[in-house]
Image (cartoon, rainbow, N blue to C red; front, side):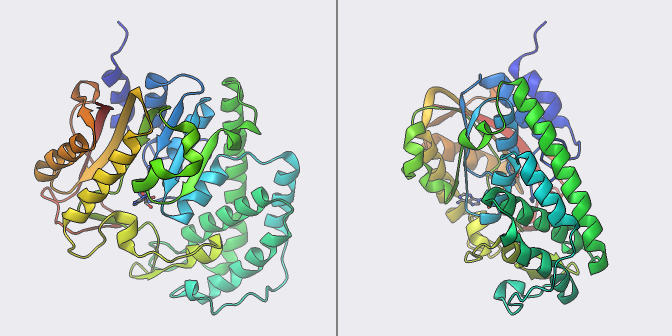
Length: 378
Ligand SMILES: C[S@@+](CC[C@H](N)C(=O)[O-])C[C@H]1O[C@@H](n2cnc3c(N)ncnc32)[C@H](O)[C@@H]1O
């Protein structure tokens, strides 16, 4: 018997497999969702050339899976790190760029002359900054913007590994080896991505042309001019929004498990102008859930305007107090113009690890639970 749609989503929904394969391994973006779940949804609900939208694209899991399968993709995020990483993960390098990047990785670069009083280096371990600076300064010598972006993403990957969440950061002598490993993993993942794309008739140079990525708030998704081309044409939304009552540290790394550093923005050459509440629709303080649900309502009302009549919306949402928050979440989607489709949902809840999450509302069950929710436009 052919499995029903909810059965097809069931296995990847339950899977606790590590996020790996293709280019997914580049940087551990917080609160990533499982590539298998996106792949199953894309296969079940779209065909080649359909548009998939993720208004909270994060580390780009949905972008990688959709583009590899010959779909077109639109992604939004407020966080410049998310946009940079998603760009790099979905833009295959040419052979010449791979060679150039490899020699950048293995070359000892001269001391840098970078300004090490940059405010984005607040709380960053000084020895690691000195070890990273020569690589960072020589990014500008790479001959294409694509290779330069990839180099920055590799530095992000390695520096996050060296610093984030560690009681003692890795010694700077470990950086060259770690950079080489990161590069090799990325190169191999990209080769795999190109291969999967080829099986779906997608040429490597098609990848960036088939996606639109925007740095901006999901609340204004429909107002974005480049998106007008796609208006009314999105077939599937697959996303994981910020969670009610939960603060995930998207824009900081934790040094010695306590202090927070914005050094990722130094490596990404990006602005660190926004506070935590911008990344979580509410922040760590007790602003309450009103602002959160207002943001969610605005986002979905905006997304609604871009959808085809037969579109579906899949969201993986974590709750600290599901009994109170899930009904309110569903009600908010109703207000934004959607009908709930529980018949398409795999049953039940998944526990999610609460590492590096901060709760505004203490979870009722000690840890947050997450759930896949399916809607269709009214
Ligand atoms: C749970 S993460 C998404 C993770 C993603 N599914 C992945 O696999 O990597 C939520 C994302 O929403 C972004 N975000 C928060 N508020 C936003 C807003 N108002 N507009 C757009 N993006 C926002 C955060 O920066 C974060 O990247």
